[in-house]
Image (cartoon, rainbow, N blue to C red; front, side):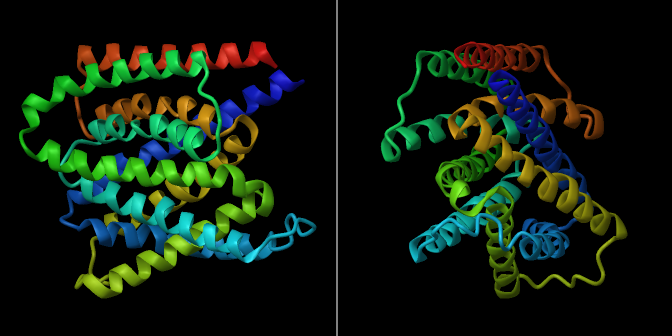
Length: 300
């Protein structure tokens, strides 16, 4: 029974990550219409906002019996700011410089950051299985990424820097959500954190952007809506549920399907070619995930 629950958590995590991965492809499609990063991020949050308002209201009494302190709300505000605001902003900016498939490969740096943060702040040990899984996964990432650097020029380094910042901020969110979710409840925590992110993006756009939101191509609005619902709202709850079941460290390793799914989606929708090195790297990532999952299940 426990093993089935673990695999259910793995399934939720994979589904959430695949949906999240589609975001990069849709953002790149939107950039074909000459729209900037902050405008696309605003559309993402604007279309997401009503869903999270309704969900936050419906689940306002979730975990009502659990004592929540002011500092818990302060941490929720902090992780909401970095998790889906800063991480998303850095990611959207990075995608203006590099391919969607490369974005997801670089973004996968965050599992190591998650495990290190868990070790430093939450005193969680790093198992040999996690080390092996991470080694294989990152070996795959290096192989896939090295095949692209020579052809993309200096932009890959600038874009890579923004994606790395996104990975660091998102990893911090994952660690924080791991111990805050039990206090607030999965759905309420996710809704609150996303509302914080939405307001942050609204303020950011109002300060720096001069874009007229009412004259954009209809395709941009359509992609913004798809990003909001299928690459933000739905996967955000799937990820939170997965973290609750299998822990943030194991979720970070399961999330290795992200580079694979993005590479495949980018190859189909953006005509970004899947090279032999990228395919080999993706196989190594899959092997790392399978080793972790099978070993973890056997321990239950």
